[in-house]
Length: 224
Length: 122
Image (cartoon, rainbow over all chains, first blue to last red; front, top):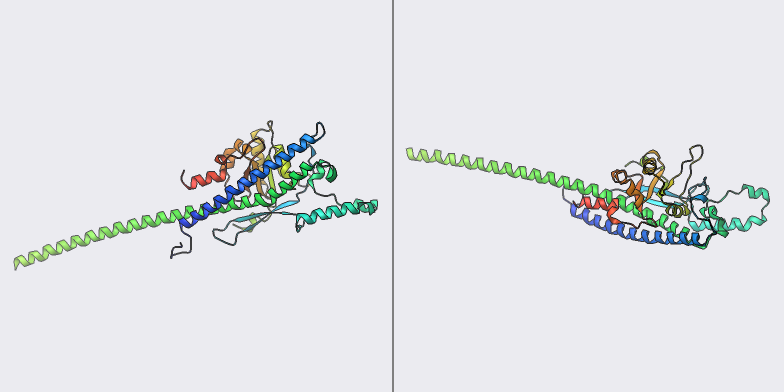
């Protein structure tokens, strides 16, 4: 319920919103935990099935890697208080936002299919793909569990992580608003208490004046 | 909150154990800036990594670099620099603690849930 004086929501409204966000945060946390445990299992499976001494880890990272998924941040336009909204989007190799992951995969497949038809000169012109699976042996020799881990990781990064970041930011914004509202309420209560005190003092003064007047009138009657 | 604060923050950063970092890099978030800087947006932490190195990476991602939007850090690693993580209050980049293979997520240690307890006066 909004107070008539201003349009700011009441503390109860804010706390209700906060608890809704907390519920969403907890659910997203559970989903991320489940998804990550699948990723770890897949990586462990890939390592187990790999040749002796091979471990899919930092030894294989490309030292010139370029991000193919980037963060986008904007401010919320809906319910106040305003907070940042995070998103993670797949980018094309030329650093322009891609429409979706599927488009990127199709391009890769097309490039591979056309490879035989192209002359060596044309091949040189082609930019190397950004797919991290290539660090671990290319699209064909990559173990299936690692590919599965990649698809799960993409889901985590594109969906759960930005949503968790957004909910966390929204919670922080509501926290600030709750604290402000609490301060406002405390100030209003203190002002009301002072006003009441003053009112009481005025009342007592009026009573005193009344008594003095009575005494004065009483004295005048007695004299008459 | 001005647009300037977040408009260039386009990367995710990770501080985690090898499997956590590998998993997230598979999703395509890894980025190394052009030479001579060649700054990575991730840190692989193992038993030999000292806390000062973790703290330095956290400091670099949160204060020095202006191109990081979200930092993912394994919760057990965040525990090693808990005083720094808990005293971090900026809106950008946002910090999220994630579980690792050997250390499941503990809500008691989560900085967001600690904020919740503070708000309700616990």
